[in-house]
Length: 263
Image (cartoon, rainbow, N blue to C red; front, side, top):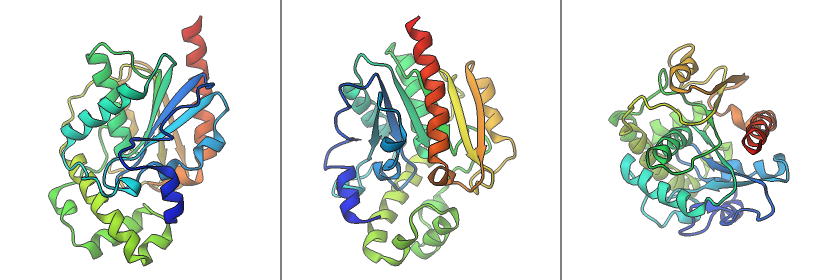
């Protein structure tokens, strides 16, 4: 990941990249990244999506071109800030959420809050690399882990491109954002809320953060409209290698739901 690429994927004070959705697109897709990263993890997705689906990816404060902004370290303030940003960007068009790991947790929370507040929510959510039960939950020992141990841990997970680990400047940007996001995830309280829209989940067969076999089945009682689980070869970051298959599957489900709402 080069700095020039990162600069193209976010701007100071800007939650979504691009800042505006394609005005000609019929459906909008809001993408939420994993801990420690930003919009850049979805840099290939616009080329994989159909032309009538406009994608915008989130970059939280404290990373990429927002690295001079103070990162959120608590769950509730982050959700409130992101909630306001989502409400400010959605329009009359149908939209969907897709999130990986921390991004999935945030997508879930946002969809639930929109229903609670009586606001039109997403047509569908995609939950990747996380389920509400049977997955790793950060603890204080992970948040305060010495940098050498933290780097070794994220290397095993395959969290970031290999060149980052040998670049002190890049690590200096990634590690603080990752610690902040681990702190956020550690404070999340599970209320067992029902997902208020159709949900599809995606996972890696050898995901190092999945602690219980069959963890994705925990979505079944929470999602009256569960569209099933898709599993792919790979670890926690299986989405990097299988982006094309995932986008094709997700979009086919999204089109079907969009057509049903028009009837």
